[in-house]
Image (cartoon, rainbow, N blue to C red):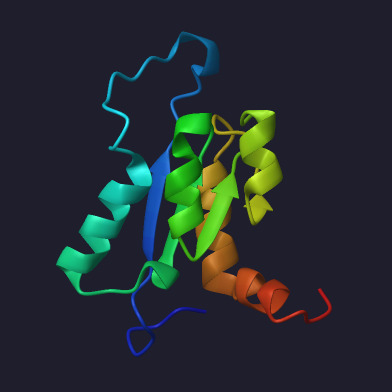
Length: 116
């Protein structure tokens, strides 16, 4: 279970559930991973303390820079392949599921290779 004495964990989520109807207009040298890098630097924290969740290919860089990159069950196949973990569907409490994993220590045990 997380408590105040532990290092801060930042949970960043970007899931709109509109995989086929989503459009982002940004320049080639800007992405969510770069933005997350700036945010963690501004907050004075390591990107390794970030849990990022996404569903679209435009979330790839964000999941790569985060300590844990999680794709939701209905994410694009390419994002699911590169994610550290996959959670439930975005419209079925996926964020709550990941928060429970963090609070219970489940993710930490899995990353240490402990039997679950």
